[in-house]
Image (cartoon, rainbow, N blue to C red):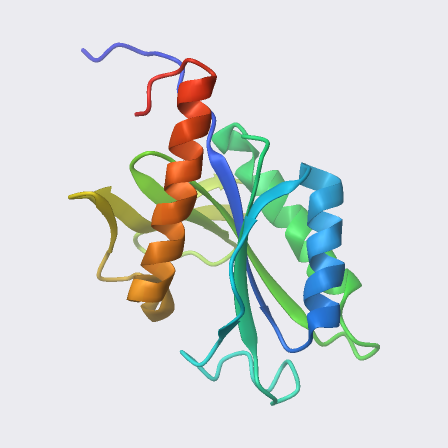
Length: 182
């Protein structure tokens, strides 16, 4: 029988897809108000991996950024965070209710990157309040790796480099608070 023990807190991350810096800045500001100061914001990345959001967000060029927050969180907070990010998407929707920013919250732990989603699939695990956990990447051989179901953009070298960087920030934080990095 395995020993039940406390797990370290995890590193809250959020992915943004948006068309204008105004939408990014507004949503980012709301997230910092809710979760505290960010300790990393990625460079601007053109989002061209799917056309899924183009019609909804106006058909122009879309961009992607990732951020993470200094304050570590319990992993069980993820459903509430996803509900709040959905509310932020609604708040920034245009007058017709069309989304102008897409927010993908999740977390990084020592061994994985998990995203929150409202959509069920065979690999997703139900958490609470209509929210599922999507195991998006796993850490092995000193880097994050994609699963067969991972979103294609999350499997790119550019994104993997970002997530490895965030994991190093997280690793340093865990060591600073005297916990094991597991």
